[in-house]
Image 1 (spheres, helix red, strand yellow):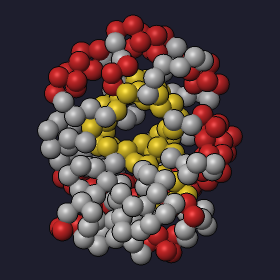
Image 2 (cartoon, rainbow, N blue to C red):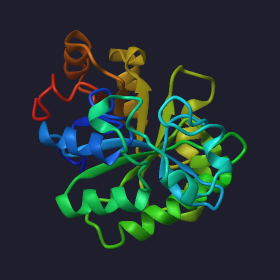
Image 3 (cartoon, rainbow, N blue to C red):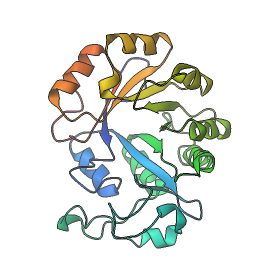
Image 4 (tube, rainbow, N blue to C red):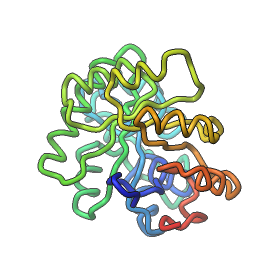
Amino acid sequence: MNSGWPYPRWIAHRGAGKQAPENTLAAFRLGATHGYRMFECDVKLSADDVPFLLHDATLERTSNGKGTAGDQSWHALSLLDAGSWHSRAHAGEPLASLDNLARYCQHNGYFLNIEIKPTPGAEVLTGQVVADAAARLWAGAAVPPLLTSFRPEALKAAQAAQPQLPRGLLLDSWWDGWVDIAQALDCTALVCNHALWDAASVRTAKQAGFRTLSYTVNDEWAARRLLDLGTDGIITDRTDLFPPDA
């Protein structure tokens, strides 16, 4: 764990999202067997505003469902098979609610990075509801989850709802005004495409007061470069390749 930063350096992407069905409890359990103590996940809302784990706006890629996930009730979503697409061994694996994942993490002492992943058009509501849920689920916890998003409006809603929860801005490019936006959102971290980091950008981010995290790092050369740069967090699919205490 980094000095002054409560989270481990190594973070399992979507659980162990290539080796098991991403964003399911099976993936988090597998990541944990490789020694990982922090996980990243994607959270959006069902039609009845239940926070649940799914990356895509639509269901087809990672379940046997069809259509926009956010248009369906949590009851309907909970009946889907989110494992057969990955492998026969995971057939029948359900979608996970944020409530269930929170229980798993807290009972085992694990840390979580919640990416707020709104259905398009639901950015503000998703930021608010996810932040409220995180505050409720981690009430009294020594280390709350880190809330991140590519969508500043979702982070702004999370900030307004639960300002005490730590936030991070996700970036896939350096766009004009990112420093001002991240500071206005009172972010503690920047979570960037790993190719964006070099000595100058790490220095700029740290001088502005941000922790430096990277996604999605699956090659040894990329991980070594980020470690040499002194970045604070590495998000990876390869929980089988990188020991989390490296």
